[in-house]
Length: 443
Image (cartoon, rainbow, N blue to C red; front, side, top):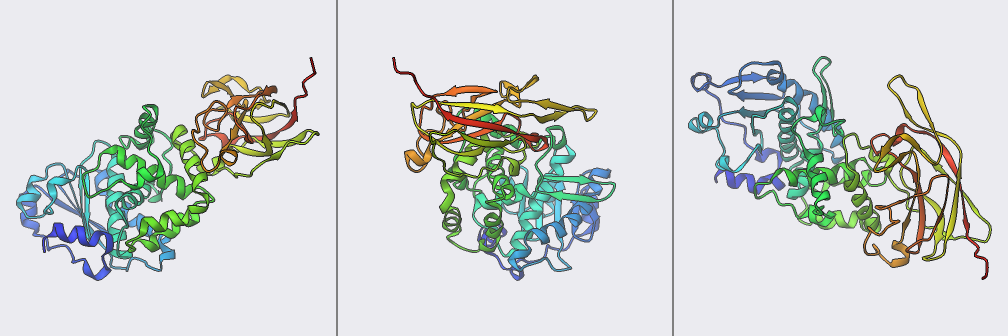
């Protein structure tokens, strides 16, 4: 059986003992080919790159990742044995490896990386961050394949490797954190997943959750595919309501009906997930904090004759008012209170009221401005058609201190203050909002 066939058969449902150890290395032949070996307890790195801190610390990076992988996958009941070790080939020029018989049969089929049991191959990259990302990405594949017994379907396999490939590394302390949301483009140079999703969204080519699940890694994938699977994994893994179910999925990687199980796990709130997914990809940016943006979808009740009073926390995303509004029937919103919307470089707070502060704008409106939107899905049935109508959660309207709204659709009224998902959790305080019917005087 060729190594290629072995990869295709075992990467989705291997057993720990089925993966053979890497072939022995001949140090003299490696040296003659311009290759050197950098060894650590968990990673044996073969490379044609000259010594440098960023290259020679990679065994330490993988060693630091081992306890993180063990913790993440602990509920599966599996854990890497003490002698678990990966050999990785990190090269600029693949030809010497091919001459030595150290490339896999499908060596010409991958762009940046490939994992095959206890061996992995990574092409040299132009930045230290993206090189480490790919090393962790391929090592995650190897961990799942050899320790869990498999990686699941292609989309999930790549989603997990992308999720656990995003990282924060401190070479001084040796501290590694996996699954982080990159804080900035500069902090994750050349990774580019955020840009890929934003560009696709701007071009009207955003993928739905089912479309992401159709991504198939049995063919060579481009950067956009990795961006979409990472985005879905990041949302599900960081969302307080979805995370427990998502983190149960590694136990199911050997199931032939993995995708059916995934859909069943989220069936009861699939419509909520679809809407939060749209919101996530529409506003995705570096530093995006998922948990504060998580929505408690609480259906509203018809507004009584007496006004309803609600509070809007400044440090959260969309919040249900518990009020159901009717299409064409105007309501008046009156907001009062003061909160902190930002702190400057010296830590000085920016006090803010419902009108926002014009010192800074976000999404075309003053920072901190009170916004309103309608979730019409309940009245429309199911997902309720287009989520893009004016006044929807994806196209909110500005309220400010006071405004009269005439809903285009019936549904539950939601409110929030205008702020970036990367910064909203830093706000403090709340607004008090009165919602009341508008009584028209007979003519």
